Image 1 (cartoon, one colour):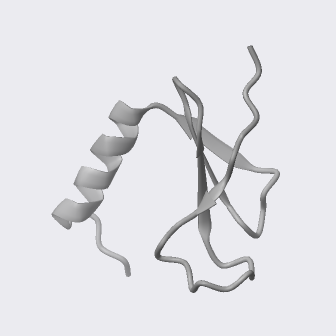
Image 2 (cartoon, helix red, strand yellow):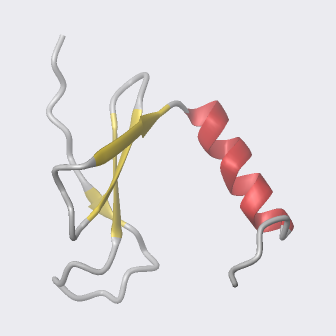
Length: 65
């Protein structure tokens, strides 16, 4: 069964209509992420690995250089 993706912008985007944000769409089993500048490229995952990534990033294990 095909699902039409309804993309939503991140609340952390600058609020404009420009290409400066991450967008998320969900189906019952999959999360889809893309950057507005390259909408034809998307990352797909499920909730468990994405939650693990977010927890790891919030922990401060990775630091921007």
